Image (cartoon, rainbow, N blue to C red; front, side):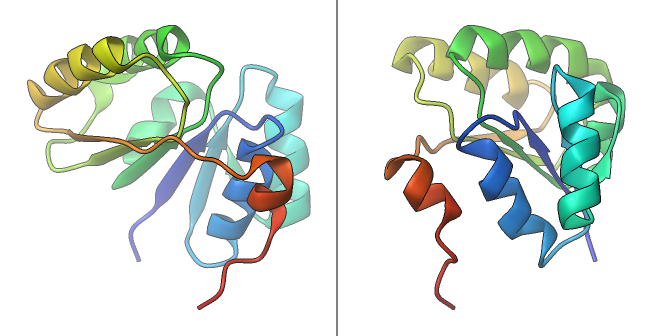
Length: 129
């Protein structure tokens, strides 16, 4: 089974990544690595350094702004696999997201701008099958 990765374990990202970890091998990264380790302990995900995120077929980001997503993307760019998907759940800036989609596309990575709503309660809710 292909791995997925989740970057950004804040109020929304932490439970969202937990849902993924119940169904897929999930790599997690957070600027505060202790939080990734806590997620690993709670959900069975694997806390990894940023470069390892590129092992995933699908990468999810849920970061404060598009600026942080772009910074992480630039750091990962040399490691990303063509054919990967980047799903950005950040409620970001549309023009910045378009530039990011172009930049990732140069590496053969498909970028999907998918901001989330529903707040923390929505992120924690168990999705229906």
